[in-house]
Each structure stands twice: as structure tokens, then as C-alpha cells.
Image 1 (cartoon, rainbow, N blue to C red):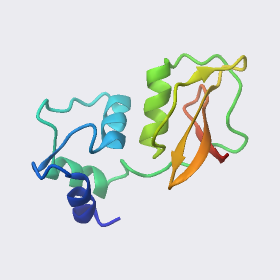
Image 2 (image 1 turned 90 degrees about the horizontal axis):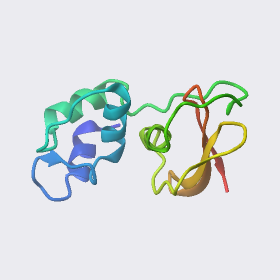
Image 3 (image 1 turned 180 degrees about the vertical axis):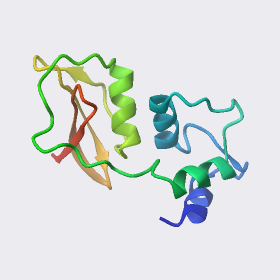
Length: 127
């Protein structure tokens, strides 16, 4: 990814800082990692540092995921995992009787079903 170009694309208001609306995956990843974000937003330097690292990488789910099990994630925590993974427009999530959070959203421009299991695996399948 061209990180400079990606920052410029996301900075829709030209402020030099990214809001949660402009960089939802960055904010979701920060919440998962327990990182604080300044009230003013994400600076270009912070974004570029994360972009050069693995902050925007999609970790492949474990084979066989999503796994049934006691899921301690809240709906917001499950949603953050999906958003950090790159899913946009995540609808309301519901936990099924197997302990898997499920919803719908969009990934790379396509409608998907999304599941988040108790291990944090994010599985997106075409609708």
C-alpha cells in the first residue's frame, strides 16, 4: 500500500488529522490494542507508522474458523475486530447459539457475511 497516498485519500477534510469517520479501521485496531488516540485525531506520522507496520494487514483466520465456543467479546469488540480486518458497513451483530458473532458488511466492494469467533478470528464469506 502507498501509505502517503492512502493518508491523503482518507484525509477528506484536509485537516492533516484523521477522524474516526476517515479512518475507522485505524481506530478499531487502536481500541483492540488498547492504544489511546488524541481527541484531535490521528496525525499523518502516526498513520504512516501504523501503515508501515502491520496495522492494516488482514490476518488469515485459522483453518476451520469460525470456532464454536464461549465468546466473551461484546458486540462492540466483535465489531471492532471486523472493522480492523477491513469490513465496512458492518450491520448490527448478533451472537448465535454457538457463541459466534455474526453480521453482514462489505469487503473490497462486495457484500459479505462476517463472523467473529471467541478466538478473534474474522471470517468473511460472499453473500
